[in-house]
Image (cartoon, rainbow, N blue to C red; front, side):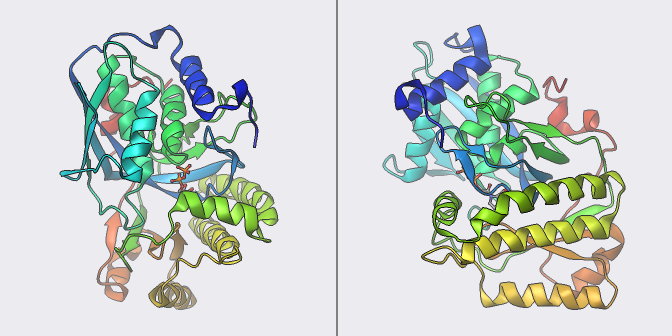
Length: 358
Ligand code: 2P0
């Protein structure tokens, strides 16, 4: 872990915000209230391990698919004291979520904007392994951008979202999104970028195995597995190799290759987790049953692949022509078409929000 700036995490995070916003920092808000949306995302090549905990800088690049209308809508309002609502419920001010939000907002407070009310609503169940801090902090970064009328480009938004949560760096963009690890200590080169590929037939579906909150959060799991798993040393090499293969597979629209890489990458991440001390086993018996079923379906000739995040729920990757067959095999499938309804990014609703994607 790299440290400078007198050793304080907050000072380093503030310096990163100053570098990103330049002379826009500390200005008066342009309006009293602003609202923004960000899609959740599922990594095909996972972010696992940080080179810097203060700034959420990753060990390796990662790549995700955004989930379209599934995500978080956030409103931010000027106030005289902080108050946060999540899905209509007031967050207790001593909760870990409220502490984390307050620390993030500390980076943006000014004389004219000393406190904020935040209302955040997920369009997917929280703690189901899909609604994560990624869409929450990406939506918040966008809402702040509007409140202050900074008119940030995608790169800067991504940097600000990353300071809230690593995977949020990817949720400011849509489609295939690659988050660059970067090499700079201040993180100025660690941001996400869209890949140009549009793949309308692609589908992602979630099988909700458990909606219960996780026993161990992904931030703690990441830290423990990096520090204690004897398998972690193999992860960065695996991730870089998977990334290069994934880039080639998507470029050539080679779905079986893309699916196989995503599945292997997710299983490698879980292997790292399982080998942690103490072990982190997110799988339920049903998780393994679904993985086995996916394997059997492939043996029958169906091109379907699985990926999992830090939780028990399985996400299936397939092309549109398999949807009917898979709904028969898995009646509870919740299907997302990440590219549905738009053939280029400029027509995507997120991109119509006067964000400069140059
Ligand atoms: C990912 N995950 O690439 C990986 C795969 C979960 C499994 O990024 O500490 O909430 O805020 O940077 O982003 C979840 O970790 O962690 C995550 P922080 P984050 O999507």
